[in-house]
Image (cartoon, rainbow, N blue to C red):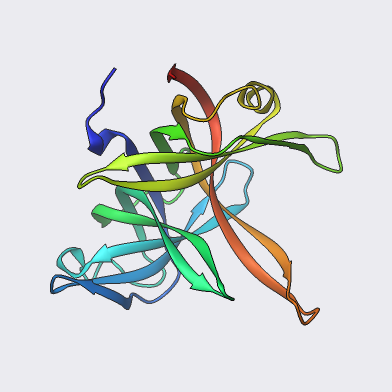
Amino acid sequence: MQYDLKENNMINLKGKVVSECCFNHEVYGEGFYNFFIETNRLSNSSDVLPVTISERLINDDVIKIGNYVEISGQIRSYNSFEENRNRLILTVFVREIKSSDDPQNKNPNQVTLNGYICKKPVYRTTPFGREITDILLAVNRAYNKSDYIPCISWGRNAIFANKLDVGENLLIAGRMQSRIYQKKLDTGEMLERTAYEVSISKIEVISK
């Protein structure tokens, strides 16, 4: 089954703008800016997610700290060279944005991905015995490019995902989440970082 490339990678968010919109980079004369959005989980906690937007879509009356917005777009990845190594960075790339008057939306974070496993899934258990499998999914986009998106599955989905092979084509539904972790530097200093990934709620094998 073939999917439109725009449908391979879709994210819809509702949340609150929690940072200023700051210039990040320019491509062929078009400027791109970053800001952060806080979106609620059903568990009453929240995720703070990075957003990238073209200058052509920016409306200062919409993207203002404290405002609630609705965003539709894609999850994009890129490599950042830090500490003598490449680090995979994720961001929400905006296609449409508008003001929202419903901050308590019950499903404010929805992701759909159609991609290929590009690294052997990694199965593990938490100290409390919860089963987890990590998947790195390669999702095609235009101009022969791909986004590499870390995904995490839980429980029965983790057991299922652990049996999958590199190259299998998956259809995934879930949400994008932020997770704070500690990284130990060569100096012994502990550095706090934030990881971004897709938490899987549904997973389906399309083909090998």
